Length: 293
Image (cartoon, rainbow, N blue to C red; front, side, top):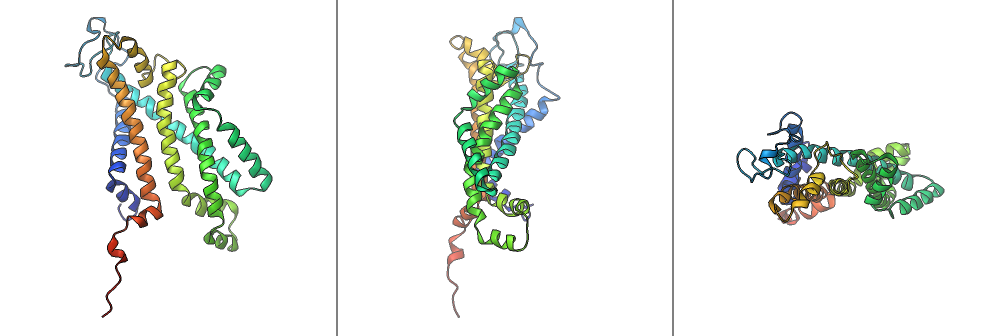
């Protein structure tokens, strides 16, 4: 595994990358487990047990309706993974398409794409989500599409100059001389060389997708009330902040750790996959001149 994926070994050797990888894997496992098991039914109302303090069997306590907060957090991880993965897929498709159109096509098309990117990037993600939800209504798909559009444009803006720079490299000119088509050059040479930049932007976009879902659910534009969501739970609990401050800590902590893990994972992946950074981290002994006998 180490020989086939050396970047994974380098990622694990970085403290930030290791922490981010563990957080992302843990959230994914919790989301998968929530499909088949939670300590209690997340939507079960138990009025006699309302506002129970953290104790057995409610390890994180209960809310104003007697629902188990730990079960709501576990089920909410499923929503978080769905939004982050969906927004990442949409951002990838939009970002790569716009970046390739802005770097590999003729001058007229490149200028049109550049103007389009400049126009779209002026709209904040939350504003795009509110505009879409005004037409289709608030839902998780509104969050996925709006964050995907917003950060797909960001990915295109950052990746396009890298593609243009790589396009004039010697190995690309050699590939053209060998008769490779533009699409083959893009897949074999251009996209792999801009992958570190793309990965960082994508991980950051997924982290902001988690924040956007929490914020939009908090405002009522995200997850419906019947679907567990960290942002929706935070919105419901903040009403009782002065009386039960500890209950608000758990969803806020879950959102913070997840966003931090995604950001650190992106930084770790950039360092692990960028060959220039890998050369900087190479041992000093490799630069020691050989002793001539």
